[in-house]
Length: 139
Length: 139
Figure (spheres, rainbow over the protein chains, first blue to last red):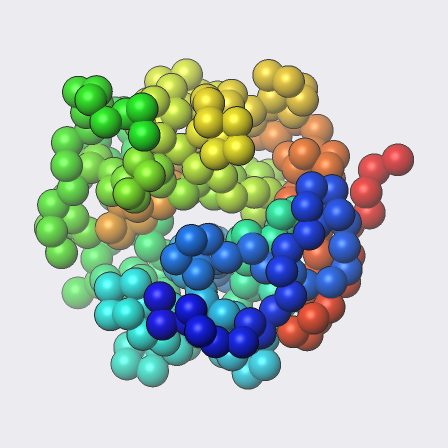
């Protein structure tokens, strides 16, 4: 990753229950330098999408109140809405016990999904091979 | 991974918008053979945890209605609740646009988190360095 020689923005994780109970934010990035980020609509409580953040994306999200992700396909920062118009204004950010995942509660404008749908989770798994659409593709 | 020589349970992903629109379940596993799985409480809509599933965990979850994950720390299948007593009974399963993430809506018994808390997301990020607990550790 291009992050390799940067000074870290965040302190390193602690171990075991220390990491679970600390009030110090010590995100645990994976070997690609990323944490998983879940976006949930603050009004409907619908889970909208799962994306990824590197250090810079996480810092920008905390500091600006706009959701910023790391695009693994384009290998660049992705401030949600800049190209699509579907912004995410961040109401709160939580981290999980071992601090390798982030939960954003957002005010979402337009559909969160790149297909135009409200949520990326628009197909229900009904058996091992079949998906049942639960939200139509917008016209 | 130990999965390398197994016959795949699921067909391979399609490309681009075909993957987004197909009604065929074609999960996109990462290079470790895993997909991310979000568990959400079907009653409260609270996001409870983020964990990982390999092919076998995903198959067992779909077929049995109990949430089964892949424990990356123990390197084994982890049927939620078998040791903790905190079961997850699956009400619905969705996948996302590119099918590399899973959303489970579950009936959760006891706390989902290994710390005993209802949700793993019990600390709010208030600035770059500080977490504010939003749920106490159970006594």
